[in-house]
Length: 352
Image (cartoon, rainbow, N blue to C red; front, side, top):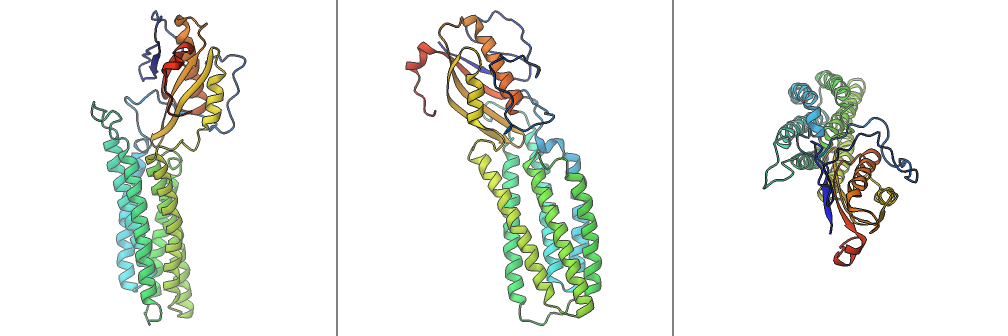
């Protein structure tokens, strides 16, 4: 006989056979068995804001929605300023920076829409709701960044060897305004960029914009004092070089989520070791961990317990397993199937 248990927001537990409705404490002050290993160094430390399942869960992007709205207003305004400045100054570098600013605005808009959709309740047809929309939005951001990078390079190559007159004055004014706006946006997004792929995408784009604006400012001063116009194309290539690695990094993280790879901050070997240290657990198989969306990790496993354990004690094993996984690995949405050792021959494990 086996029992399946899933942690939920309301503290309801399917404890398996023999459960007589006992109430159990699931706070993070759970007293582990003396043989239980300490929190592994690979797990993220410090204060943790744990969810208890998915119902009513606020996604990482949703927590920072107001910040994204402020950044969107700043970015859209500076895009208009830089676009006008690029045409007045005839500067490719400034136009590239304006184009990058446009992708920032589009990316933040997509992230905001995605955060609203991701907060919609789950249904019987979409059991995780639309949380993954945030990840798809981050993928769109990465693709847009890559396209902008290619366009900048092509236009820069096309201009090489041609005499293009660039007005340094308007170029500098627009670039300095962009740099100041990007600096403010960075400070606004700083606290949320470690929690959400979408906020991180917006943060990286704004960071790239800031560096791009600095490159345009430098190019503007060189043109102002030397008249060397080709530096405008060089600056545009520098901006493209800043964009490319950020697009790659964002898309790589998105693919990790979509391919349901183990979260980077979760060590499955250490997780298995901790689960096996729980009194009565003799084996753990079909252990999986994945990311549903930014800030929402999930885990499932089959846990084999000693036949000597009374079925009424299954809930104690489940309590310690959930406390362990939640406290040590910041993963509280987990589904655990408890199996007596005598049930093992009936299991056909697909994974170790």
